[in-house]
Length: 430
Ligand code: 4AD
Ligand code: MG
Image (cartoon, rainbow, N blue to C red; front, side, top):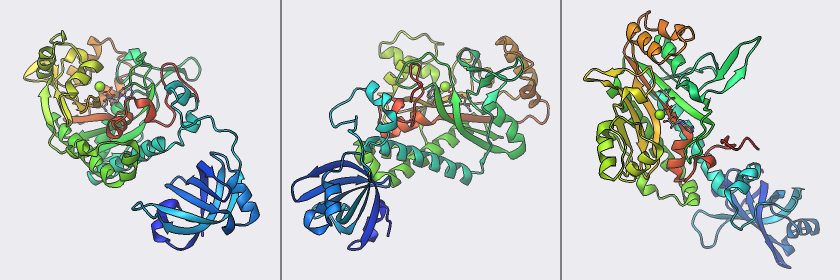
């Protein structure tokens, strides 16, 4: 019977067959140990020469690292380790004997590993990261579904910018038309709320940012959410509930993955709503006390966020940034019109921004004025402006960067390991 390694505990003392890859091999004259991985987990097959036929022994004793393999044997509990099972082999077949594997046990530099990303993806740490990423995605869908958000798929080819024109990828459409790869589906979700009330999208977005930091990817996955009849405060409440749910869920389901990554989950267990909130003005003051010369109305850079978030061990909202550093669609704060009703959610342990969100400008005249002030192409935004003419309502939303959340939850230094095939300023391959 074919069994996944993760299901071994239900099959102790039974004869099972496992199909996978030998990620480590060791053999002496009479016994071979094959470390096997099948996607669901890891196990050791013990192959004793006396217990298998001659061909099986020959295959097992000459098996190379990363050969694809089929092993039949009896499942047993590891004599020393709790929750660890072994397979005592009765038959071994090699599907394909691997050539000498380029990724060894010695330390490799990041460039070598990224050049070999198609192979690097198989190592246990990379397996663990992708499993956690998957759990974050599932938790997001579940939370959104349980809170009446409908999934609305926004387009990838767009005629206009969402987050500013400097970071747009331009592509040839048909005839002499240009199209742009989407930076965020937000504007389309704002249209959809008048149909479905609350919605979200989840997909790849593109930013032609010439940034080479540990937080920037050229192509990354964003989850945008938008809710009708929701204000700035309600928007933050949705975010803190969602993020807390994701963290609890991942802790619950990814114990083995965290162990492989050596991630201290005690810090994650402190993530509970409500999250602390400070204003942009407060943040500037803290940074200045720490010796920064940041201007009063400056945006926070990646380094500022790192400095700030080394002081916090739980997520933090920074609200009400200067309007001049934020997007045209954000609603002004009626108490101080130089600022907007926005929030960035920053992750602790120095991770920085994981979510950007705001209440949206819902008044037609004010929004037209903003489009003109920022010299945006009014024609391309005609449909978006229309939304303020036909039953406009107060509304708010946010976008989370999946890779930044994965990096924080997994405790990784750089976002390049959080996505299966990263697109970076200097990297399009593999
Ligand atoms: O703050 P941003 O630019 O917000 C928007 O695009 C809004 N339209 C979202 C909305 O309100 N629906 O991007 C949202 C998040 C950031 O907080 C960050 O986590 C992530 O996307 N992000 C990036 N992640 C990786 N690489 C990049 N170059 C990123 N740029 C933004
Ligand atoms: Mg942002």
